[in-house]
Image (cartoon, rainbow, N blue to C red; front, side, top):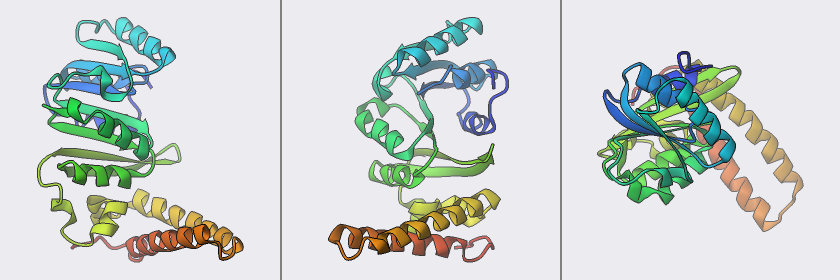
Length: 242
């Protein structure tokens, strides 16, 4: 991967950056995405944020090598600390767990003033992000699920709007699996949730061995409910029409 040829998942993130954006890429990893976005005319200015010195230096070196010091500002900071309110109109966060992405968004909520679009690529627990979007009045406008090098990724795009709109029916199921992904049910979607169901079946067997301890009983109920939802999602390989 380089600044001219991104991975499949980062290409999908880049494709969702609005035209002429001023973007902030949080956890930028060599600043590949901002460099690509500037070079392809997707963004006019970018901030690449990193919290650790090693990745920060790698991003600085990449930006310098690309001759983009005037367009990309590499900054050190935790999450959205690297931007000021009103400074950017698009925020991208890719390659982290959904829980961490949610934490970054929650801790930096005041920095999202003026941001028109969020493009988020969690490696797991995308449902945590969907719940955060609803709680903070961000409307999910697009979802993608794909497989790359044996791993399955989701990309969620949100803008300020009617946060409940995508969940008019079957909210619990759609929060877990993604309303648009559930409607499409592509190969990556089915593979992911069949794999998740198999893993939960193993968890259930282990919980059975734990006996009647209260914590185990509560965990078992939670796992059973999630497994029930997953089985509902993959029960038919036909696309949802609701």
